[in-house]
Length: 258
Image (cartoon, rainbow, N blue to C red):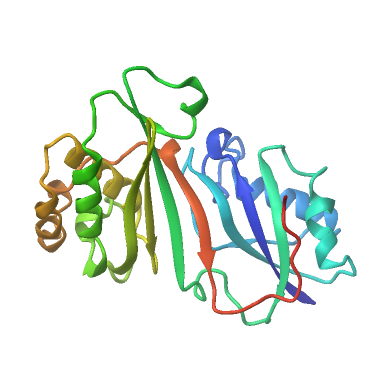
């Protein structure tokens, strides 16, 4: 039996999030992936363990998943072997063998998310599924200054949606910055973990900073308040992409997409 770590990329537009749901009519990324892998490995009991639970409409380029299989299929052939079994909007990017006690969520050391904003007078139809549209001009300089205030180890209760059931709301943000490319404003956040809707609330707060509703210097006050009402809106899901999940090891074999 091998424990294999898969890197998955997907367009989350047509899915009810990553995690399987009890309602059979709700199609999820995990459900589609598990179905395909059960066929490939001829293992009807195969289950996936994902590193991150993305919401409806959220995308990923670097979701990580482990499976336990008894197979002779070479690791480098697994990504190609899955392509005819998966929908076009889900791709296995690479496969690596990991130790049998490896866990994709608990062994994660950090994650990077990107949030995309299309800022202009008119919507861009090509961006409608992959960014949030903001009509009024945003002050990117102020947004950049505010983003730096998130860096550090804090109790991020003010940036957590209600309904979350975690033992601790303390997280460490290693990096947070804003980059503008024409009408696109991209927010990048890297941390050791994130609370429910945390990145989307951070993005919504930075949008409010860009509109002048919140001062960059207020970010730390909002964090220390631990009060969700003091932070900004929860930005729309389609602007969010899970970019990468990091571990302190190297797998045995990798097959990457071009």
